[in-house]
Length: 192
Image (cartoon, rainbow, N blue to C red):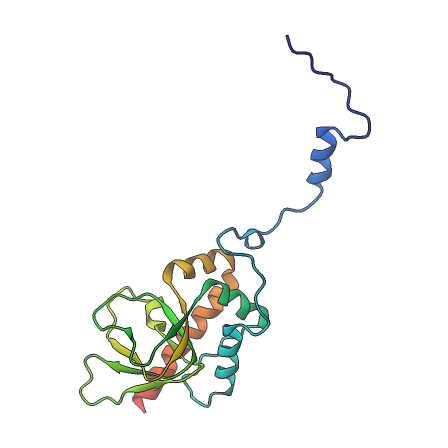
């Protein structure tokens, strides 16, 4: 039959030695072993950092300001898709189910309620978010949103939000907390 030598080769550790050497090292946390995302390094001035800077400078009560560090913004942007939109582009169509969260990086968007009778349209400037209700509801959207000029938005789809939640739950939780705060601020603004 087959003859397999049982003595270890000189200079090479046995499989048992390799096992015990590896067993002493801690396993990586699953978020560090993320296989869902492309692991290319983020540029120093990514779109999410530009969005964060615009939100910090905004005087609007509706600006989106989660408690993120620079690294958190970079992680969030790795789950988003950047979209360059021309003027007059319809971002959200009333009556359709849209579960994406969008961040306005450049340009201005006009948001109107489909059932608006006397309500004024809302202008969304850099630093604002759009679609925060979609994080909490499956219902069709009641907003009509168009770009007023060439715009850049970051879009976080529902599947990518689920990946973010699995990979980085603390970032996803802070995102939900801040989105809830934006909804509450919008409610206070519409009452007053």
